[in-house]
Amino acid sequence: MNDKLKIAAAVICLGGAFTAVSYASDLVQAHLSNGAIYINNEKKELPSGQSVMNVNGSTYVPIRFISEQLHNIVGYDAQSKSVYIDDNQIRYNKSTVTQSDQTEQFKLKLSSAKTRYAEGEPLNVWASLTSLSKEELTIHHGGALILYYIRGADGTEASLLDPQMLVTETFQYDNERLESMPQELLISYNLNRLHSDDLDTYMRTTPRPAALPKGKYVIGAVSSYSLNEDNMIDTKQELVAELEIEVE
Image (cartoon, rainbow, N blue to C red; front, side):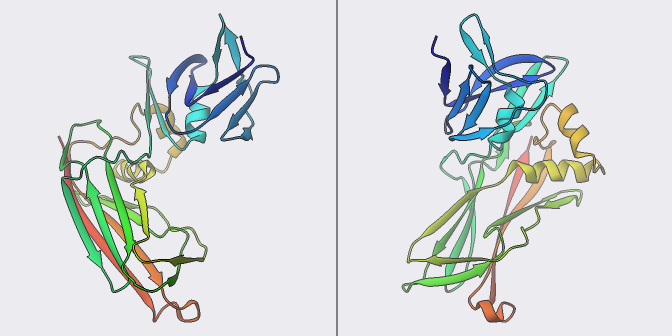
């Protein structure tokens, strides 16, 4: 067997047991000779006690480590011995509900593939920001141009902090920024709902960390930017779009 296994997939280690799952958009390379893992050609150091293994001609690599390197959310149900992996990929389904907001420069559109999701089903929600300016447009914004928030029927809320940095970007007419709602937002919401700040324990003991309980929710997307770097406050523009979904 070739000692370098190329897979468009990740494999995870939970509780010392190795298993494999496929992942369709990133390249993972496992080198048996030196036990190295490369993700998109970047070497990753395995945690202590974990290694690449060759069992009966098949190569096994630790699934939790690789999935988290690929920014996936991993959960393990000890009772059923099931591994759950939720990703942040936009699945490009047709939207059934869309809300939008716009300024002279941009249109923000928030979409969901469904208005009702089954409990445990990943939410397929995404936002797009499209330039409306016929002229080249330079804007200044924080680390994230599109931020999300969620609010439950009981008033529980969660949002992700904008990285403290200044980014300058140039847009041409009809340029579009497309971003999916991050699973980390739902984890933050669940922690707030449980009045807990113990993220590590929650992630290790919850089978579906990013799954929402049954109920109605408001999901919002916000895009803030300024037109003048020297006068960020007075030239600040903000777009907000909200939609409602239900988990049943």
